[in-house]
Length: 488
Ligand code: 2HG
Ligand code: ZN
Image (cartoon, rainbow, N blue to C red):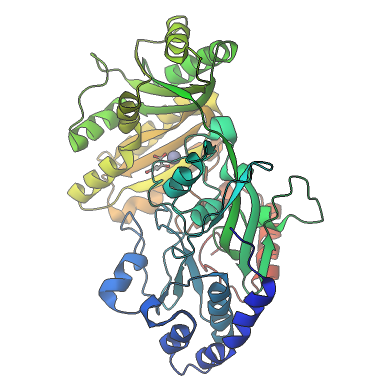
């Protein structure tokens, strides 16, 4: 992406002083925003605004003043400046695939949809990076770099809709963390608009560039509370020539943890690299099959399933190596290995379609699931799953727990259905306290959003929270950026 000229950005801001003034005087807020982004991109009609005012789960919603769809960083800066002058909260929004209410407008706020920031730059082979506008969906960024033989180190089921800006704002995890780490590790540069409308930009791609505080890293995972991410320079890696996927039947969640522990050194010793290790269990698989019509993946059912993917070069005998490693690993009850793309994709479907299957079950039951995303030391996964099942069913006999996740990182997605809406907060408390007591984190990869604000103290000390509040106060003293997210 060509570097925007900061002077041009400042120029845009100056041109929009009138708009800021109008908003300040409350003449007509929508009109002021219209002057910045144009009438076609200032949305106030309820049926058009609707899609931006509610999250994917249907659990979180707000009544925005107007949805604004800026075309570029200059317009983002102008909107933020105008809203700051008028004291109007701004809620950055990417693909709106988040599951914790972090991109949903509070009443009277301006959701800033970043989807029009869709520039994509060429891969710079020297630094192995490519720049993208914040609004580019992950799948499009993946296709863009794949054309030149590269891939991005982040991948997740919501790839078609989740945007690069959203992945960065939430420090998303996903299915490649075992190999490449979280999104944080894939970011080589950031451009963002701060709460006062100023633009910070460090998109050079320099691989060594230590000059004081790393503002970009501070913005990653800040969930839109410190700035609006407008562009990102992402690292890329050479695309794998071959892939193999195995779906493995295991005796329990703890058994799947043991199988992975036994399998990993064997895979390390052979060709290829382990890039994914995912988990789901029998009742989740049954729900996915019912929802999708998919057939059984293995002849017999198993209590838990491990899905692993390995990648390698053109000559690597990956499926053979994977099958051999599985044969030698204790605890494997059955397994199917695939390397042909359609068969691999079919195995991934059992894992990736859990979210939509559970959402459909929520619709049937009349309430969306309570979605809890936690992480634990892998050795505690099995016992904690048993504990959570135990505490939930004794407090709420009708509760139904669906769980799946990213096994190597001990990241569980606990989806609870069948709890009376009046009891959802207490049920969440029960689960999150069980996780925290076992040394886990209440927030693994989805962020805190609005959903988990009451529980941040379970995973961060008073000193850590005080430091976070100090950072927030310094960068957004009026608390207009994504209010209600992270802090109450
Ligand atoms: C996944 O890994 C996503 O499937 C979504 O992070 C998890 O729906 C969920 O709870
Ligand atoms: Zn996940």
